[in-house]
Image (tube, rainbow, N blue to C red; front, side, top):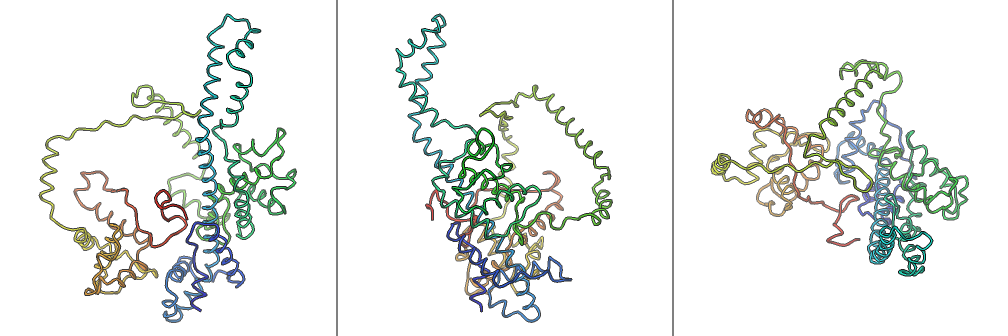
Length: 508
């Protein structure tokens, strides 16, 4: 059934908690099918991933049109990786929603602080004047200070100013605890579903997080849990004032939950916590050589890298290089007028002065005008087709199945798709019904099946390699090129990490 297949392989598109819960329902449906198959013997993982990629991105009708045994292999590869892909999507969206939650709380904290800024300024001014009076008059006996201060500022005013300062000042490591408490129900529901409905595992660096999460799962009510036995090793230094009492025992269950969520979020980013099964969020140690395999390959690897088998000696060599470099730079620091050290917010930073702009000699201006007049009046598509014919980079743009294109006029269609994306104009201005290579259906098909990060990277590498062979590049440097600009790229639909900018289009 094509409709059911489309539902099973659909990824979440909106960065919302409701979409996250619907995706978890999809993940549960996948598990109910019992599709966690054993890895097929004798099939390379690269080939398996290639087939599953075709199955995830192609239309169901296109999969049905494949010939046997390719159709069966493609569908089998899809179901072999389907749960892992769904787990990746769930982990990614859950991590993104946790980020949004903490970002919202921090923004609300900053807004509340700005709202009460006038009260803080008034209290700080009173306390500053009081301190100034104490410092300026050094002849008054200590016993007379209290009466003199109260004569200028009543005791109640001073206490109110102190209370205002206490309520508004924040240490540099403060956490938006009050703002997170206002979002307690949403936070608790989100993290409960993450920890109970996504199969996660940990590396050695995530064992403390896993222990704390397991303890939370065993508690029926997180806000009123008996926290005497709660593990505390995972609580970060910035969260300890909110969670622990004076003797290091947990006294605030809600703050403890927020601290665990924060630790889990950081562990996922480090991949100390990972999805199992998973692909993008899988165990980063998969594929590493272990024990006997590593012992057999260690000598070859070390010889290839020009390193010895003596680990401590290699570490000492690198340590000596680092120490010598640091000493050399530190010795020259005082002689460099453009280098200075500044302290901001209790942190010492290195500040480097901006480079002065160099003037342009007349010869450069003349050369620029001459080059401008020599340049042909060619459009971007003409230039792209010329580069394509000279370098042959179109051969690196392959189908989802890693097969080269077989259609006629592929270079023309590819040029149109690249220009449409690079210039952010879409296919409409370039589509022509009277030209088979420029028809809307051809451009959409090519964009869906050929344009991927890996094919674009291969094409770029091919162009750079051809560029380095030009004699003129030796006059510019080592022949490597790079570019950056502020262009925004079109997204065909919303995604977890792509969507309308809330600054201009609102939220939702």
